[in-house]
Length: 255
Image (cartoon, rainbow, N blue to C red; front, top):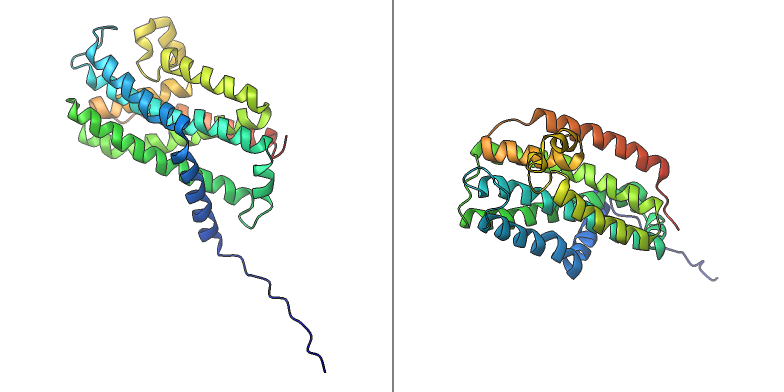
């Protein structure tokens, strides 16, 4: 009598473990990407040093009290938007997203893993930049340090949603150009690196309602003055909801 062969089907790991494993994978990609490290860490460091040492534009004294929060906002956008938009666009082009979406992690687990990875990497880079700013003489408000994770979480949400919106609607080459151009515009004229008021009152009136301006204003308000940035938080919340709904309607998992 010949025994029937049995096939063992492996049981998928619990959902939490799958998401954490995906987050580890995504974080390792971010940390191994030399271009991403250049945009998310090296360029913000250069901006910090340059803006603290030069006398233009005219800022409050000490200059680092204004510059350091803006550099943190710039670094967060570099990771959550620029790097993620480019990576996601090329993953979609080469079929990586489609493949991962069919694995046990699923589409929702894939997005959750990306969010966790970006949050962890952003927290690390903000810590490094913050310590460098402290060495250079920055003294952030203690209450602001307690509130900073709230602003950071809102910023990651908004700019990851914006990254997915861009990456899911355009070809990879176009995303590469748009993401880098947007980074330059947001840093220079979007209220991210410096207050919108440095470009004039009319510009400031518009910039404060942009997600970049709201993120920069929130970091500056809490870290320089210890105030609770309710209006910037509300602006970020509205942008986050709107962009997330747009992603759900337009994002494509394949080219």
